[in-house]
Image (cartoon, rainbow, N blue to C red; front, side):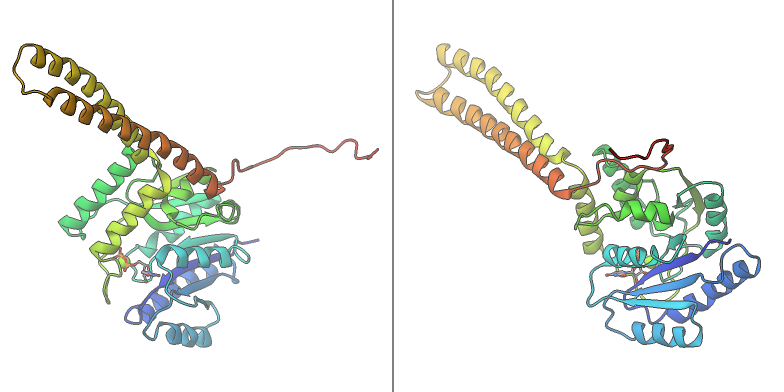
Length: 322
Ligand code: UDP
Ligand code: MG
């Protein structure tokens, strides 16, 4: 039996690109269906993320023209990540595999087939990775590179140059559904799931119509969200800074005392300066320690799954219950 594939596309004010996207994807899907690569029950699913233009009307009319197009309409704009999750969680009920991609066709749709082949080879997750960013501006290239490097530095395991263009199997999606966090940063969560995974390279195109919904302010907020949702290293940095300043204060104290007894200071200076340094160090250290506990609470509140079972072998020899 062929696999049911659902393409999941979050859309926010995408009326300018939607019809073109739909026709290009339809061509690819029909070709794959004809070759028996995917099931005829496969769908192209648009998630309308509270658009203010005619995005939803277009999705409705696409569905009327061809039931391969389906739609999910969110009650309001909840942002790309939430819209994507809504789509994936809906699709997981009906699909064997999902591929998430942007509605503006920046992600090269010609690698969809390659992704499916990788899935057939046993991968549960296939990450689309940008090989070159020739078409991105220098600013976007550098900021993106810094972001990935910084995340790695903070101990967050993300796939370099991978956005949200990825194939996920039903198994991987079920595991994803166990992550209940509200601050969603899928690029960080998906690698945590585990399972056999691989990458497929592609070149990212320019958005062919409409405007980017990720201006600099949103990009920064996204990066900040990614860091604070995955790393308590910033808290640890405060603790380290506290220890450092406290140690400096001890050395400074010796220096201040020497200065005092060699007569290089005015009366009262030593005690004031020494206490400023010491108290400062102790305060930072205390903040860091409190932060450690907050970090623990933060990790607990996420209620992330502690393990995910991928396979099980169990022979039930004796099923009698006494
Ligand atoms: N998007 C969304 N909700 C938002 C912002 C964006 O669903 O609040 C969708 C958008 O329609 C597109 C994808 O997320 O399909 C990526 O957005 P965009 O292309 O604007 O980002 P960029 O490629 O410029 O980083
Ligand atoms: Mg885009």
